Length: 530
Ligand code: ME8
Image (cartoon, rainbow, N blue to C red; front, top):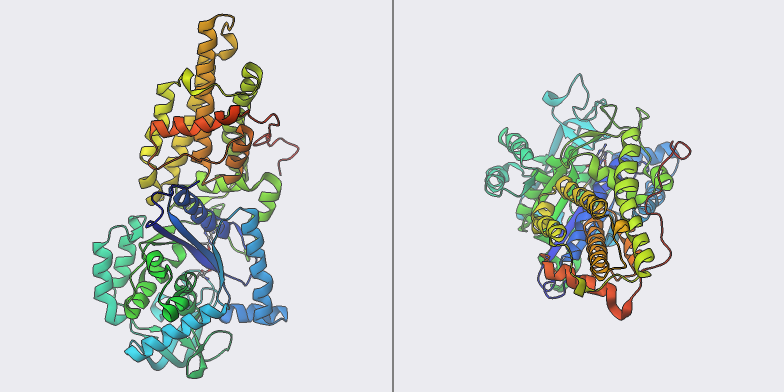
């Protein structure tokens, strides 16, 4: 399936945040994970060795409090809730390579290893923290940043704390970090987020408190188990443990180095500061390279308000998947708002998009072309010798020529836009050429019909390729209908001859398309509309 010639030395590491286990997942968690899954699928298709990690963030005061409220242990809570994330990711066809939990043995070793190394280096020191803390956000706050005594991020009351604490020397790395960000244009994406991070750094970085003594649910500081390590110091290191940092330290040989420098961390804008400031400083201190990209996407809102359990406006992704299918949800999340911006989740828009773009444009196209093949050629796609319509195929070449760059810039909006424009072009091509009007009793007419059918089936094959990263289920259904292996001859970048050759697979052993045709996207009508 992938291009084996190039996979030897092309690595790609993509991550999602690890999610808190205080509650079951909602649409925001589905969103980030679908973005990561789509790019992982595209990179695999283009011949990269991909490692995709996701998982759960299981330590800290917030989890301890929730467990206490439910009368169970924090580990029991984590055991129960992490399953909900795994179930959701299974339903959404998330192709992760590792689901990391911060209670995993190798992760705990990584965190203690890093903490000890930085104490030895003098980048972590013991002192006292006096200030404010927001437990829901697990964030230390200055008095100046509070709004009426509450957290500026979530609006909930902050608590005053005073306790002995270890600190990480952020201040030591302030200038180096600012210079790094200035000089690496692709480090923070979208580009407009870069200035936001730079102005935060330029206000001055205070050393960061990275341990707590007033509760116990966390990883102990090596040699001083009065302290548990700050949940963010613990959580960020998952990006090392997930790809075998511990094994690399012990045996010195695995793909850790090759993967880590290609890392793309996909996060919501709420946690950009942790990833673009604290995390790089931790890596500088540890002497490790920085990730390649941190991509911060926007927020899904409900009626322009942030979704939250307390407002009761959280959307349950499992319900949507069970009602309309995983691909429908994946598509809506990626198509409705441009990655990087905020958007409102709106059920009417969901249904309208589904019916017009999925059921009507894409679903009908596949259905009419497979029906025509059955009717006119007994289900055998016409052979390469009949040729294909160059104008139509050129559209695919234009899309694929820009595909790599667009994925690297997370410009999914453009990719989907181009793909749906192409779908509509093929629909128009069928309407304009009107195969049903051709007089096939004449040789000329028959040749013409075969050329149209071949152009159409090649186009459907290309559409299946283009939608695969976003809607793997629909793509697999199309391939099954066409009775083909998935994209077996595609190379990247795609050339016209590859497209035509790959469609040669359609003819292998006189292969016939499948007689059983699935309806890709049944229309949502009044009866099944919620
Ligand atoms: O912050 N719209 O975990 P978390 C879009 N454990 N995305 C949303 C969203 C919304 N309304 N709500 C949540 C944590 N997200 C830490 C991360 S990483 C080392 C540690 C997504 O469970 C988005 O990706 O609060 C956001 O950054 C993340 O969920 C926060 O998940």
